[in-house]
Length: 459
Image (cartoon, rainbow, N blue to C red):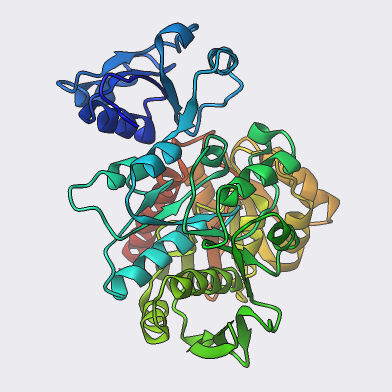
């Protein structure tokens, strides 16, 4: 596509929208970047656009842009159902997301990872595997640097590893990754998608343009993802933590093994994988599958799995004092993620939960809380919903906190030597914070303050 003079309107001045605007302006497009927020709220973004030739419009989206627009690009947080986009679509104006733009610009092979939980860890792990395998790689997408920015680097990489969300996949048209990974699909973002079927359909768009020379990697243990094998045109590679697969990536006698095309290769004993938890074993198996089909060798894959420390806000160690360990799992933004976090530990757990519910239900989560949680501290908008679920399960050892730091302090007060204080909220952070990273950072800061106070009391 020739970009010189192309009239592009971008909805949303967040990270990906601003990146797309800059990339397109550099390519000669006539770019308008708009947002519902006021100019006062977007001062830093507007300042950063100075001298780029990009027109910034704040305080709302234009109501009728179809007659003077060749292309619309939307940020992931902007739903397709808002009136200006509905009107533009009816007028035949193409509507892309930043992911589609990145694909149109990229020269590299793309490994794309989606799923309800585990995306960020698996994306970072696969990226590290390519680095350790001496491959030119960049990692981005829904995490880190926007993919379109990486796609136009002066020295383009050999491989782009991208975390992609259901929101991003709603607006693809030609996006065709060399490798598509779907880790799992459980109910999430139903406030946006409406139904689980819609959410699942959005996730499955990741392989919608693939052909037989591409690979779709699916979790055999997850019923929803296993069934997607019938819908992709690509070569399917299954991975499984629970089943002894004749063909795929699985665990046999405590070892990760690759069984593909009549050949079996041992990769690493499970006990040597650095990141903890059964869910992270699934992430590791998916990463091995992606690395293997892209030509990485078993010794290199094993090295990465032994040394990869994980990523912030996913079962991240946040401190320890007098036998009490603090774990930051702020990325546990839905019940399924929080369940996996709880299953990762055998020690008594003091759990901090709550925030903004994204449409999930808490019954299975409440059952596990009754079985595994010594004490529970609830905070945020969804505290009442979680309370109702745990009371229905007969669980009574819970407390309410008015603020997030107060919740952390109450959890620390309830803990004893040998316990884990776990932040795994099962909810989004938006009722109290801008994002889950900010919530995790406040958790870590509060933990540091508590430990220093405890030390001062002893000295």
